[in-house]
Image (cartoon, rainbow, N blue to C red):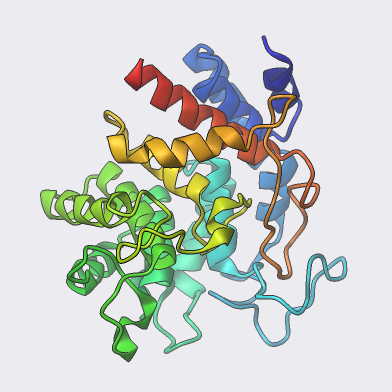
Length: 319
């Protein structure tokens, strides 16, 4: 086993079980036993312990007005807070917590019955109005076994002519956003895995084309890099797009890698450090429950795991 794999396996249970599944080909029983620990210890357990009264931090997308961090503020209080129900459920989904764990079921049931969107008071799994928020809601709803068909139908109706989505469409924008599109694509993929119909797959493929036609980070009009921040990798990405997030989406979607991923994969390779690891580069400012990485410029277990499994998929399919 490589030094990098050993280092990854020394991380949180939410990392360890995915390393066993995605990088070491461990037996299914070993993977399942490791995954079961996510809800019982480490970061996953800490998040679940913070659930209270149908929500995290007393809100759906933003903390409630009376919420205060139990151990004092962690992160940047001037940035967008990442402690409410949606970002917390997204993180639990990324951690791969078992949706059938009784502690998880209790929390998700409570969110379904008690959590309401700040925008208009709608029930959490009925969705909001912004497609970037709704994409994340579909993702966690599908993963945790909730009915999000109504949100999916709304998203299908909001797909723009160029194939993607944009939260600014309601304000007249006709061009898609990488940020919004990746959020929706992840949601549709999770919904498809949970049994979504062929119209979901069709819309998802159109959305993928929006990214692929731009090599995952270029402007369609000029071929220039659309945003230099997308070339720097972050975890958790929150609602933000970057090249690693895009590549990990295509890996999760499976199948043969599209040739138009080659430039993005080359960039991913260029970011690997001499010791075989990838760094945390672009932490998105805001309040968090606790830090899951050691800060920008430091080796990142999550970025390293995601990068290695992308390359394993890509190299294995193109060899």
